[in-house]
Image (cartoon, rainbow, N blue to C red; front, side, top):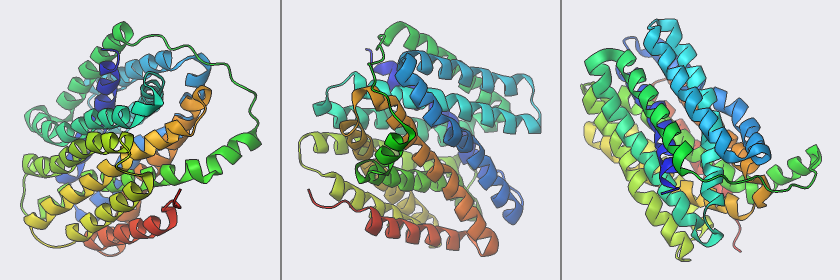
Length: 376
């Protein structure tokens, strides 16, 4: 029972982020201007996380991950509720910034608790399950979010997110055990720099950044491609949900394969980045069929990389520094989450969206070569 609120927290951040993101593009009217605006709006939520996740991760090591988890969930509910009561265009930007800041607290705290509450031999399975429920949030976000926006606009969607975050906060307060912080040795800035530039940390973190960039671009821009093919809001949400559903199915299986020794980080990173790159190649081709194939391939690629990356980070980190490591690794992910949409939007503004997809595919293939771990 103690793991379920953590899974629910993962669901909350994923649903909250992508329920809004997937429905911004489908309602855009002007192609060039909306792509730039869409890129900035998608990056706003993640930009707050880029700045704050390492900070909250370090705080979690000092005072314990559970209080940071609860603080973040309450903050997410408050930020969401603010837009419900003040339904003005400018408050959408403010609410997204507040949600991103709150997610910066409870996301690395949840990852830390997943690692602390499970033995190292089960980290693959634990992070695979955590990723599964997070992907369920990605799956439900575009589809359910599209339905909520259709019924009552973004105000209704933010109302649902308010209730969801508040409910998970109460659940976590009751069910998640207190995990006291561990004694820590003194760490200098040089020590931290050495640790985060070590290939043992850098490779999985950069692979996670690439996977998250692919996921963010897929969720944010595939609806634009679907709309250009004549699909409505709910239909484009369903197409993007295929991406997240595939990732949800792949992650637990990947985690179990890692724990059983049937899969290595080297193979997983290579296959995952390759699948995501192939997916964006398909997204650049015309037709709804290629859109669906692209969504499935991108989802499979991110689903392979995510549990491997987090399990590898947990295995190579001293337990007393798990919060800092998870927060810093999440920083890398959020750089990909924010940078991916901005990169594709910039290329699409100069050329067309299909060229943006192909440019990202090339970057993923370059990352496959650079980040491929050496054989152990």
